[in-house]
Structure formats: C-alpha cells, structure tokens
Length: 323
Image (cartoon, rainbow, N blue to C red; front, side):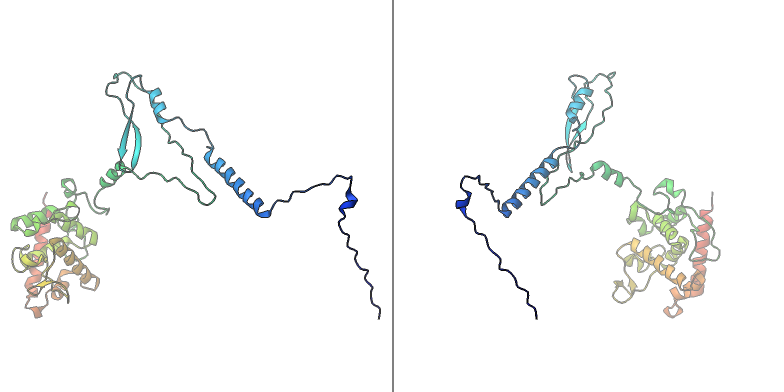
C-alpha cells in the first residue's frame, strides 16, 4: 500500500530588517461600512440635484406676460381666491381705451420642482374643479330617461295620448294626455295637486312620466284613483295618501285597514308597482286584474267596478284626442 508523502509547507515570516534601504509601499485600508455610507450619501446628493433641476426651461411668469400684453398703466392682473385655493386670472381694465385690443395671451401653468428623497417621492396633484364645473353640473336636466319630455309647458305639449287602449291593457303606452289628467284632478279639487313631486313636476306630469317609464298606461291609474276615492277627496284616501286603497302587508303602516303612505308620490308609486306585478303574473288587462284587485269577498261589485274604470279610461282618451 503506497502512501503519498506531503512536504511540510514552509511559512515565511515578515522580516523588517531585510527591507532596510528599500522604499516601503503603505496602503490605507478603509472600513467597508464607511464605503457603504459614502455611496448612500453620494447617491442621495445626485438624486437631489437631478430632482431640483428643471428638465426644461421655466415658462415666463404670468405677471410678466400680462404686463407685456396690456397697455402701460393698465391693471391687467387681479388675484382672486376660490374655494379650492388661490389662482391668478386676467381681467380687462375698466379704464382701458375701447380701441385698444391686447394680443391674445396663452398662459401656461408653471412647473414647480418636486421635492424628492431616497425614501419618498412627492407627486404634485392637479387642483380640484372650481365653481364653473359645479354650475355646469347643476344645469343638467333633472331626468335621465330618453322617453320623458322636459318639465314645463314645452314638455307638456309632448305628453299626449300616444295610442288608444281599447282592450284596457295594463302594459301600454299612455292613452291619456297630461292636460287631461291635470284637468280632471283640478275639476275634483284633488288634494294631490298641492303636494310636491320629484324633479319639480306637478302631479299630472309625475303620473304621466311614471307610466311612460314603467310601460303602464297612466289612464288605468287615474281611473282607479277616481273610482276608489274621487281623486282623494272621499273615504280613507284623505288620511292614507293611497291612490288605489291598497291593503297593507304585515308590518306596514295602516289606517282603518288601508295602507298609509307618507306622501301622494309614494302612493302613486305603489299603485304602479302593484299593477305592474299583476301584469307580469298573467292579469294583463283591467277586466282580468279587477277581481284580484278588489275581490268579491271584500264586498266589491266587480262588474260595476270594471265598467267604471273602462268608462273613465275611455273618457280620458276622448278628452286627450281633442285638438
């Protein structure tokens, strides 16, 4: 068995005596943590210089541009304060001669240097919109449906009887005009005329628009309103604001066994809701819906009820069709 022999390693020791007369090179050792700290400080300084130095020439201040554009001695710059901060605006001087026309001024927003640090970058945000945009939003029309005319006399001319409804279908375009609805309510001195409604409408406009949007003939609601309480002038409707004398469900407010609404607008909405529910579940016409709306077990004469509603709907259409 052969065993390899390893020569012992000779360790040379440093002998200063052997270096006499020869130049000695001295090396300065810098700690590693000092190098790291220096690199961080240098990087932060470079980043600060780059961030605070503008990348493009700064635009001319607005005051200098205004002074150059306007005539000498004119007060062309006036500072105004708005809700979102301070801003500068150009105003024509009241003392300027009428024939003097200043050249058009293009004012550009000055770019402010953005402060920066190695840990956090600060971003400049645009100012909030001023009062001009808020005023523009308030000037929009109140309604958003394409089916509805504008509120007022100009729109009422378009709220007409769109088609007759001889079958007394619940799902149908309006077969009555807003003028006929308003005339009928005014003749009966309905208390619903004095209530307030959404979008600044009166009761006639609200009834017509609700039927147009829900695809329910408003003539049916007006006819039920007439048969049940003579447009809110008789019976419990004077206390409940109910258009159709609807029975309450458990937990709903009621007076004398009828559901009570906090406004005539809510009573109109619920009448439309109930008629639309009947139509979706098979009772698509007034003659079919009346026995469910006013069951004979509740001491109702369905024959006379149906005849009354159909007669009122026909009379409303006849009044609406007049030139």
